[in-house]
Length: 267
Image 1 (cartoon, helix red, strand yellow):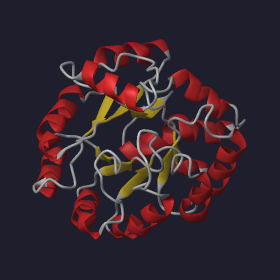
Image 2 (cartoon, rainbow, N blue to C red):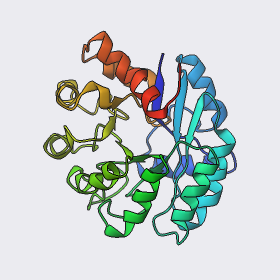
Image 3 (cartoon, rainbow, N blue to C red):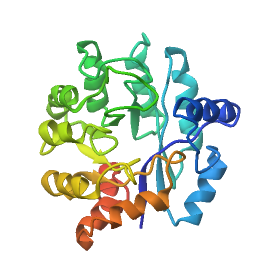
Image 4 (spheres, one colour):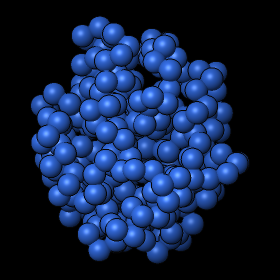
């Protein structure tokens, strides 16, 4: 079984514009699929992916309603869609309650796209509400190749806000093995803390021995397989996991069991 915990899909009416802009800003990156829900489902079937977590992002305060309505529309047994709020939206906290009512299991925040520092005290109410509602919060963590410094979610900054979630029973996922291109800081600040890492966008970008060391020291029970589709191939990211020669137990935990437990779903 495979659960891909980090994927992206765009509404049909904006997919071409969104994919073109994102590709251009990332140096004309070549996507692996078209970015529609239809191409996504076809890709899941091709590579035997049982479930995908689709991470949606409200890139401006006015997008919240549409983004979350789209998430609810595509949410299904095989597509587990996360919603989003924008930290600058005056009704961000209220929208979290609507996300819960829509039946979504979590939200995605992207400090680079949304232009906020993860440890800004102004976000405390959002974090507390997310945790109290039992929603999972996935952060883009580390560098985003479309943006210059400063990095808005470094491992050090993320560590500062984890107590808010822990005290309220919240669950946090730091994407890209805890912090894209900042893996030394991941080991220094986040390894051993109460946070999940996903493996998205690691193939050919992160040394497998570095990843294996992080997994061993952090615990394979806190690692989630992710691809970052459409920007990386599921089959390639799977090869990255296989390159570490993990035990069958650790491999199963990463590929699907940890996600099942976190999402509270069966096989």
